[in-house]
Length: 188
Image 1 (tube, helix red, strand yellow):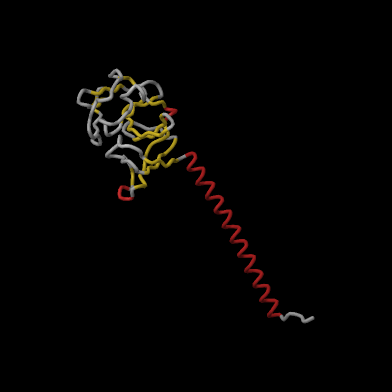
Image 2 (tube, rainbow, N blue to C red):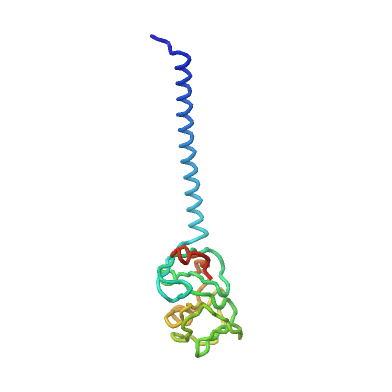
């Protein structure tokens, strides 16, 4: 039996080292992917949601088909667009008043909160249509009074079927639009 030369032994040693290094790199890459996937899952589960707009009640701010990022567990404040659960679906509306504030809507559709004009430059089609609740209304404890930006077609807190939305039904605050790309950016 022939003995391998020193050059052959060195060549075999180099090949073995490269193979071990490649195996370690693949194993390391695998664990990095597992950690990244776990972090992404945790973020998606606890901190953000991705939703698609269905309907026209928030036009011109949000349009049918827009894809939005919602920050979960974030208490919305007056003027924020919020996503909330209603009848096994997710709806979008704007926060007009929170616990203890008093809301009124005049016959032309102008909204006042605590006697002050709410000032809504984003609203199209101001309207009091569909309002079957008694106004002025003081928002109950841990609830929100929400309205759509397109008031003529929006079903919102003016309707007794929705009314003031419970804090427990709030998914979170809409912060970012990712689709369509032409409108990519923050949502106000």
